[in-house]
Length: 219
Image 1 (cartoon, helix red, strand yellow):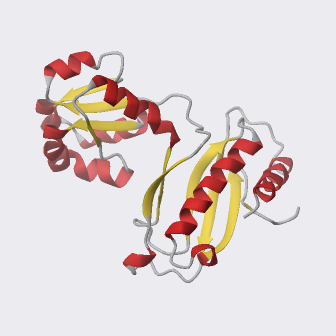
Image 2: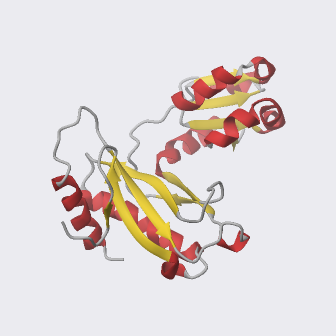
């Protein structure tokens, strides 16, 4: 895959989507596959890739915690703290709302079983099951700071083997930076596919409000 081809596709995509929006549109990457069977475990992938140019400028963080002393030290580091005794009282509607308001979900190790028991059904389908937090405020801060670079690439929960769609950047970012992100995901993915690049049928890009444009297609 040629990076210049991705940049050219972005130029064509923007040229065909000139209507001014009142928000910074997301750039989405679509990858379609061939000769993959989602029922075959060797054809499933689920991994994290670190993109070089994160599109999130600020993330909101949330932690389930038991240790009151640790909780006190996390003030100013974590945006919201919920203690273990509060977990069984949380309503599904409240948890669902939290998954839309917060990006990084953490949990102190001793609290994970309680989280799974009471909130797993609400958090897991939304990809918000907590990361285990080390008992150290500096290490927790480092986890939060690293989060914007981490992008999950997975077809494990797909109902078919046909395609995946990922948010890869923002329209306000330089085309060169978005192309770097795309190449990083593409190169990581072909390492996971059983037949590498031969399992990719085509790759496409779109903005939030546009139709898709295949990489390599000419306008």
